[in-house]
Length: 297
Image 1 (spheres, rainbow, N blue to C red):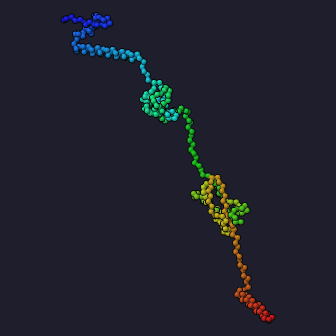
Image 2: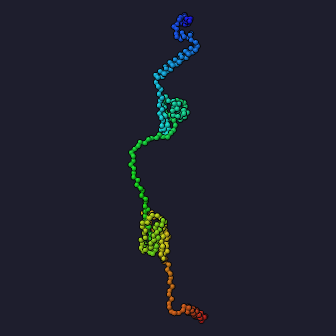
Image 3: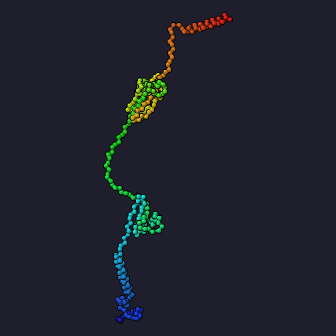
């Protein structure tokens, strides 16, 4: 095999030809065919890529890890507004992605023209219900015994009725006007549970009905013979619990007297004869007067 030598390398710095140190690549290239050169280039490229990848991994491991600023969960305030306070490294886009509120909505809610925000700035994210405050449990109340409410009983009252002799006929009872005896007083309530009646007696005190249940009552009187009523004979009254009600009915004694004819005297003569005798006497007197006038004349 003929002996091969490496080509001479020209160095412009010194302006002359000189021999350089041969390398493995320069020795093998002349004896390689095209396929071998291709494989060699592929292997060299893979080795270079692995070397670069390992160095990048080393730099990544040596570099400090990026820590994202924690996003505090906003809660509605007492007025229902959801406020977020801008943190370091925050942008509108980051806040939009984390909160779910679009950038346009953030601009509109906070009257922003651009995307400039500053740390500590309050941003309105929306409106919600007021935050729920968990009440602090206190001491358990002592249960109070429930006492059944008693059923109210109906009250009672008193009705006093007087049928009086209205002597002056003014329909107003005077102290000196007494009760009319032998009259009747009737007391009835609308429910029908009370139906009472009494006969009036002499005196000035009224007739009283005690322990009557409260309610509406109808009072009526019957006037004895010889009297004419000066007031109504029926009256409706409402009796409340604890009431003592007085009702007066008046009547006036009938003062019209009948003129009795005198009894005839018993002579045994007919009254017709007496009348005839009287007529004869009158005629006789008339004739005597007439004769006396004629004699004078």
